[in-house]
Image 1 (spheres, one colour):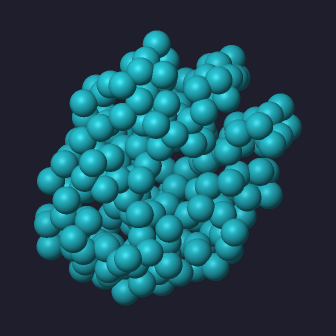
Image 2 (spheres, rainbow, N blue to C red):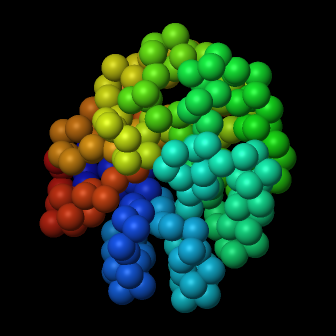
Length: 221
């Protein structure tokens, strides 16, 4: 597998609260140079990136991030604004409290509502696996499937732990056939990226991928 192939599965990510426009611009320039799938950036920068780079890269942003406990109506409004500003992809955090309370029907309803207004966009659902039991993760695989999302995503990168290979294998077993997997959080080596892709991930949320692979773009890694 060449470095370029790995990067084609990467959402080149910068979600730090201190990110400046110069930081975001550098991220976007790298994404264009190294052909990552998208950039994943704070919602406040979506319109500015759209205006500066219109048509040159895919823009992903996050809502309900990173804690997930905004009201459904707040998430719907945030998604609507993000799409109007130019987002091509939306990564939304579930209400983790609902999962801990066993209120999975409510989570499915929220996902369906978000899916309805994101028609034509890529919609990923972040379940924040570090806070969940395996039974809760399995139930959430069903919620994401029934809700019609395109992807289930492991983590925000702001929780107590990021993606794990065990979680990806569990998701692969329990998601529907139309749902893809995005691993994110704590992915910091080339070997890890390769392993996640081999285990069935279609996307990787990484901040380090370009740094690790830019000098190996055309090489087998």
